[in-house]
Image 1: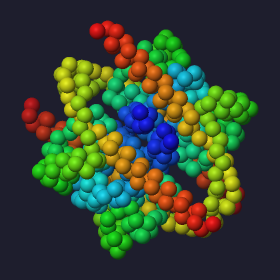
Image 2: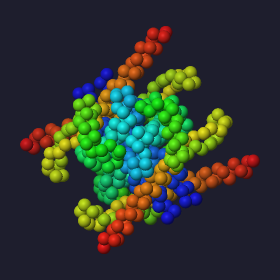
Image 3: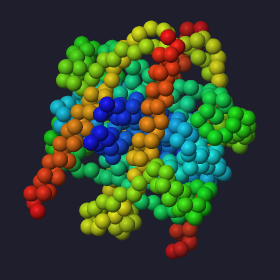
Image 4: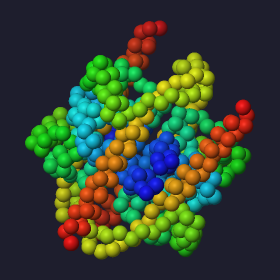
Length: 126
Length: 126
Length: 126
Length: 126
């Protein structure tokens, strides 16, 4: 009984997320709610569920299935998310997976502009 | 130039978050937006800024300063967040820090009930 | 071409490890080499390969297969590692998995004694 | 008492490490012991101690201070580690920091060659 809490914690495990998402999602135009959806996507992808359905995603959130399906399409249109096909060798089929690489690049691009702006401002001050 | 993107990514670093937060925040009554605020708090605490102001938190989010101040109070009332005082030895002063320990325990409690429910249901099926 | 390095990095992903392992493995009597083996075990378990073979483990390390098999036995004898059986529901079989829970508890126990020692020493100083 | 173990665990926190380090350190010529030293360096850097002394590093390991000082030099010679100077704005001084960026690039280069080799081999098989 004494250790049950601790064991349950260990079994759940941790997820590693890029800090830049938390610091810059607002700057690339994502709402707080949309950022939570991105985090859920990232969590499924990292666990090996590379193409989670809107239904699976909505079970953990307050957004309903239709809204999630629509947000995923919007993410793709806005260049935050891409769908790639790959060969699933275990099952010998071609399958699809989400990639958040476009978003990571956008966030880094945003950061790059900030840093460039700071350097330019620093020069002017001199 | 070729490596600039990669270097920027490395410098930003990663944050480790408990998976149970993503899977169970809805079950303890947190909205998607409130969960983002919890994540921002966790991020500051892990970086050593143990008592971030509502103003600092709101810079990264779409929630305004007053709403954040009010949410932090609500988190404390609902038993998700606590404020602890500690001795800051470097500066020789007593200071305050936030702790998310109450929330982690609530999430684990929720998970425990689920698992207990599943075991009970499994027994009835037999 | 420009982004290849970055994409490769993202695809590899990150692993979350308990900091207490790095700070206290020496105190519980693990060598640097043994700690690397623990980290490899932890990495496989987190990726879902819950019972990695000595052969798979040795491919990533400088320790040969026989030495690894022997170290795993020693870890169990010394109370760092346990083997648990569980029901693999997908394949409908009972399988075995490693658990590092005993080690995490030992490390926390070690930390607890240190902190107790510090408190006792602080009292005596007064 | 019941929760003490759990609270201690939470306070220690987690460290995020690149998986490619665990899977490829052997391939770039690092021993198991040297990889532990890299992990300790990474841990200090991430916590904000960007230029840990050999003495601080040796406290957590089985390698003595002189050997650690010598290994750090070797890491620099072999292109795994670099020392960069930066402006510490809080203290208004120029300071030095370690960077593991050269190692991350080497590991990715190694992975790139593997993948290239696999593609070439796959073509020949056809």
